[in-house]
Length: 295
Image (tube, rainbow, N blue to C red):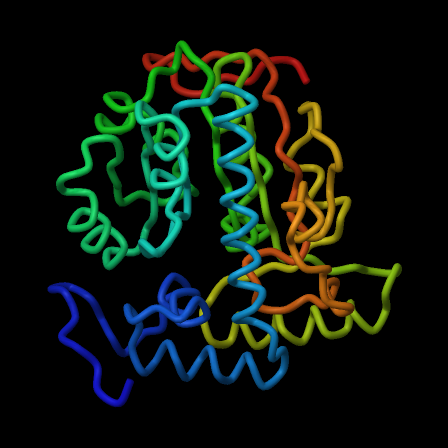
């Protein structure tokens, strides 16, 4: 793109957006010069970012297909959804169950603007603007309560969002508040930037370098170890194959073999996704907010 189209009202095109950088990696057009500069800078360190972005979308589609067709889930809460792009959650879900319902959540106003335009005539999905750091705001939102029935199982999607919460913001408590609100029989899917740690010293060094660039450019990004990622799902029963690289989570039979550098940490939406897991039987009381059950 040599010239940017006009931005929606209230959008500051001088500040890069994680959602728009990801849109650029996916080959989308809803990004601006500042976003492309950040993406191109990152690609000089880790050039397989666009392929990784596509791998994350493929992972998302496989998760939704499994949850709808095998687990019987027909309602989803997708937090940190990003900009609408091909193969959205509601598109995949209603392909297999026309009655499926989806609530998208993102804190970027451009996501809200584009999402509402896309979903205006859908009726089976909606989008709200909220921050994952305020889980009770999400859970108490009127559209969330109108679209989702918290007396039936829900698919909670936390794709590439928890790594944008710093350690000082207590991401484990944020994840726990959302998970604790789920009815029995619900499922959770998590993907996350990964630091291989002592298992791969060179990969860990690259992870820390990319983390530095990311935080200098976009503000928040935390590459965590396997143990730190698994802690978000504490108390849940993981599905096979558990914590694995994106391409290795229940791949399609005709999918190409993963690249040799699939463990390389970079600006992919998740270098190693948490497997989908069943949620513990916990309930959400709208009058009291989130309450934790014994883990």
